[in-house]
Every structure is written in structure tokens, then in C-alpha cells.
Image 1 (cartoon, rainbow, N blue to C red):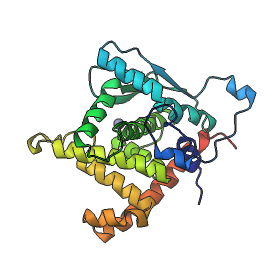
Image 2: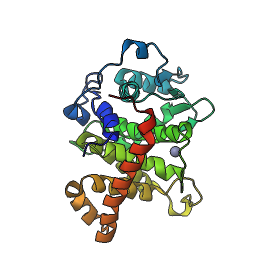
Image 3: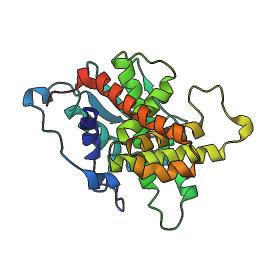
Length: 278
Ligand SMILES: [Zn+2]
């Protein structure tokens, strides 16, 4: 069944990052499908629902990361295409900036998502430390993981702007939003796999004495398993081996399929009011 949420993914799946970053070959390119038809002229002249800005970096490293992101057009290609799919009552801006910390966050006051240059740098270092000969360049998992984070923050923005009631932890809900969205296509699943890898690697680096049980997020290893659960839910045959390797009981595997279907249906319904009619 082709859900309405799939329209959003179609926009995301059409992203081609390889044309702008030398040596990169993102798997999304292979699954580029139908690009949404252009909006009528009248609609184009109104304020776009999604826009991307850069705050100039002040450090040399920050400038290098800013140059990379601007050249790769990572967020432009992901987010600006959503203007063809959704019309929001309040516009969302994605700003990239030097923050002085590794972070990404959504600010309800100005409806702005901030992605810190330091986060990109953190992913570069994380994936570089694990890179084996023959692995893809570290830009690939870095971009993929940034895409997951951006969709996580977009989930926060949708919850805020659409007044979505959230029972349970919002951080879990938006992790699921990002994973479900990506899990619908092969290229998206590869992107979500990179994010799962991030949580796995991060969990391995954590000192057991300092695990933040008090945090608003689930623990890294739980976030890893949650993404894997959605991936399996969307494509059981593809991920059956991984579930077995992780010793996830069959009963839980079945629940993952149900949770994935529920999440897909729920987000579809939530986003229906802002979807631009085809
Ligand atoms: Zn969050």
C-alpha cells in the first residue's frame, strides 16, 4: 500500500548528493522516483514552509564543515523538497551554525531547527575511527546520520506546530518518526542504518558508570534497537538475519512489525491536514 507518508519520502528519496560532493555516491540516487509536480505559480510566491540558512562559522574547523555542508547541499535537498509536499501554518527554518557544542535542537519560539557544525564534525570523527579498508568514505555515513537527526528534529517541529498530543517520551516518538520515514525505501533504510550504527558505536564508547539513566532520550543502545525494530518492521525478510544475530525474540520481532505499521498509519494521519493536494 502506498501511504501518504510515502509522498514525503518520495521527495527525500529524490535527493542526489553525489552530484555535489566529489567521490560520494549516495544510495538514495538509485531510488530516485517521481519528483512531485511543481507548485502553481501563485503558491510559489508565498512564503515557503521550509527554508535553510547558514550562520557563518567563526573557527577554521567550523568554516570547513560549513563549506562541506554548503557544497553537499545536504539539507537543502532534503528539506526544500518538502515545500512541494506540505504547506505549514507556520514556516520552519533549518539553520546551521557553530554552537560551541555537539548538538541539534528545535526551538519552538522561532520554529527553528539548529544543526550545529560540531555535530557534523563529531560524526566525521566517529566514523573515521571505525573505518575499515574498503568502507565508503566517511562523508557517506556522516551525511546519512545528519539526515536522520534532521528528520528527528523535524518530528519535534511537527509535534509543536500541529499540536500533536504525545503520550510517552517525545524523544522516542521523533526517533520513530525519522526511522519510519526512512524505512520505506531501500536508500532510506541504508540512511537509517548509518544512524543505528552511530548509536551502537556511541554505546560502545560509553563508560558504564556514566550512563545517563536520567536523560530525556532513551539510552544509545536502546535507540539502536528501536531503529533496527522499525527497519525490520518495514522489511522483515531483509533484516531477519540481523534480528537473529541480535538475539531478539520472535515475539518481539512480531511486535516490531505491528509498531512499524501503527507508527506509519499514525504519522500519515497527523500530517494529512498539511499535505498539499496532488
Ligand atoms: Zn530530540
